[in-house]
Length: 323
Length: 295
Figure 1: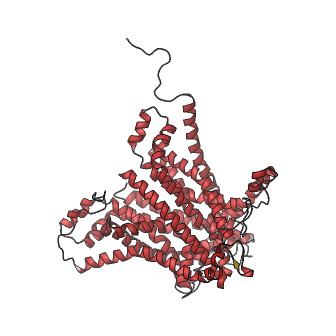
Figure 2: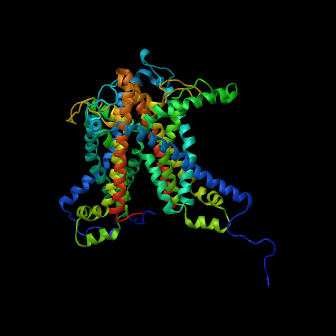
Figure 3: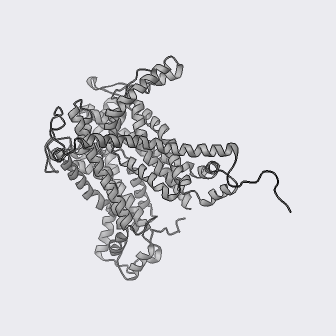
């Protein structure tokens, strides 16, 4: 595996013959290395500098940082309701975006011929280019007023039914966990789609042809040949989508309703970690500001863990495909 | 003579429930695509329809009025100037650094552990939420110095860097090895081979990757919230004093109850989307026209 010279790696014999390399050549190598190391330097600096600014919060609250109450007026800064909001909105976004994204990825790789696939790819790219703040603007001025009526209808429909009433019953609000989840779903669909597509594209043609040769329909071929080969990679793609959904700020800040509550009611206003940072930072100082930066530290830690796991899975899946 | 009697064998397509299931699956895939198209079309139509009403030369150049002002007063001139300053500075910092980083990964590091670590962490870094980058620059720069367009550019640059490294790395991988070997055979040094042979061979893909990174950065709001604030008059000096940007203005105006401010938000949104689309189309054009090696 390591002996194999990939397309981009100069093989042994391609090295310059002279051992005494000119100063300019060595300088260039050092500059390139320094540029590459910037990635590691920045990541370490992020962790260090934000943690330093958040220390007053960590010191003041201890494990209370995971407390339920967030009230700047009484200097209580428990982050649980925001962690809950981030988890709920991300979960809603994933439940909606993942089947759709995998469906489009299969459509692009297995159904539509290559030429016809390009317009579909353009549409997905367009979706990725719409900035977060434009989703937020559309969300708060167009989508929220429209969907508020639908929520009210659903809430009156499920009133009194045991579980459904707890999830979809009143109180309802156009700006809510569920609305934020929907908008986040639109925003993470492009990345989950394109990564799933990359993973599915590595399924060996011989596996697919074998399935067809046994008389499988396309669906059976997907179940038997594509799915076993690419499920790991798709899990990685979904985790990357989760990372995006957790960190998405501006759109969520505009449509989530900005209310630090923990409730099972999905149509009720809530708040998430990035949204509360964006909304409350301008008026914050002292421990309040330290707490908001601390939320950023927690967010950084969560997303780094998820991304490391996801990239490891995707990387392994891609290596499997090329081997 | 042996002939199949009774019903004729049809090898083309399965029958009955299997066929129906297959059809249902195909239909569901198409439905998935339609589900994505609907909101996209809605957003684009709303932004264009409501933005086009307000956009004029005056809107693009005038100072930012107070929120209560009606739609035909003032514009977003300072925000456009600010966006160009900030994104320009971020590009000048992140793109050369990103290309050099990718050169290290691909030309020097190879499959060594350090290069693999840097490449992996660059991937991970693309997943760092943009608001965390804003908090980072606030902690490390703004608290020591001041709010400025440059601080915003630092935050956007941090977001762009891993994206540029990754897209450039992909492009450098596509440059065929015999090109390098031929240059070494002529006695060129590695730096020279990289600068005069490898980079020119990959320039189309590198530029279009950089343009896509710029398009994404231009739409970012969260990292600018705590690094540039907002202002209502043009700040010509990006290194000193608060500044503003198109996305920041949209964010401020979106929560305003005044119809004039909301109209200006739609106009700014249309401007932002047009800028992003132009960059994306330029990237596509360059990919189609100047790419020598592709997958």
